[in-house]
Length: 518
Image (cartoon, rainbow, N blue to C red; front, side, top):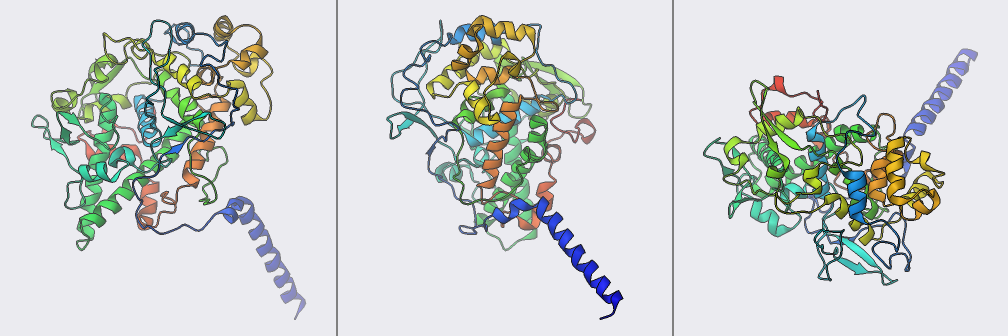
């Protein structure tokens, strides 16, 4: 072999080694990925109910009392820290989310988490507030309550289709792979099916308020859009096959929108803080109690006092609906959506700036959640729910996430007014405060990460939970065999495109950056 050939050979070998090294350094997670099971082909219903997983396992003597023996009354916390003021501690800077952002978060929550009341004696919530039921639970080996999640820990489209065979079957039209609809004689639009004058969706909370019902209706229409597209291209497919492939398309689109559009805005990171996609069969699929009961409830702080309704052709605002009138009003068939359709509310939400992310909550959520004449403080309820679920203190969670205990108030907030409010409620001694720091309220008080909407503890915990949801799901769209030929289209789906093809909104009115206020 000539010297020239030897030199070329050595160069090529070196080049291959370098390429393999670089590829390996960027895809090192791949070697831990498990093969994707393909049986059953379609995602099953009726996932068994499981207790929530715990970030920090509690000990038998940790939760003898709901107030930990010395924590402040929940009503005091709500009045001091959650009532509306003229001092939002951390106003939005670069990225400003709109009302679609918080309702999407609620829609996803209703796909992942559902607790039901136990038959135990009701518990005290706060001074002057009605008592509430404890969450259904099982007892662990220590005799401690482990609350049950009644939904599968996957982004499986259950909010659209139901999580049981019975509900899913009721929602199906029985032909062409389609879902049932009702038709408004006022707008001639397809709406969710009716049962005793109530809209019925996959989740029992589908018509909790007008804007959430719009999101449910949107995805019912999107399913029927895909059922029609698939039937046209595959005339040999029967109702069952069309329905299931369309269902996989829908939860794939919901996953793509959540991970590619919504989470990057929330967390300030497009890669879940370094957690790259990798199906891992050895991981146990579960939702953390701390996530479900405290850290993912940030959206309650962002809800607006009013919902906007806009003209779908001129893009201009027409009216605003008071939040208290939008909640729990059972809008079908005589309600707002039946007469006005969903487009105006979705467009209005895209043009309505979400309330600032902070510890404060509009009075409609703190005082009149179930209507004008009913007092129920959602902030107090969130806090007592965290105590009832025996969540660790915020400082213990902080230590678990950051590998060190918070040193002082500066690790929580640098806002002097907010700091004084916290001290007034919880006390001045930071070490003592840490023992009783309720995670929901302290997570909202934590100073946001640059580029994110939440503080570093929330960002890390939520990123890890969504990475876990993705990586334990054998039907996640990035590796789902049912929709492999549509993977690129699903991956590039934006909420704006789904809205435009299922409503009468003119494309000039809706930004492609659907969750941003503009």
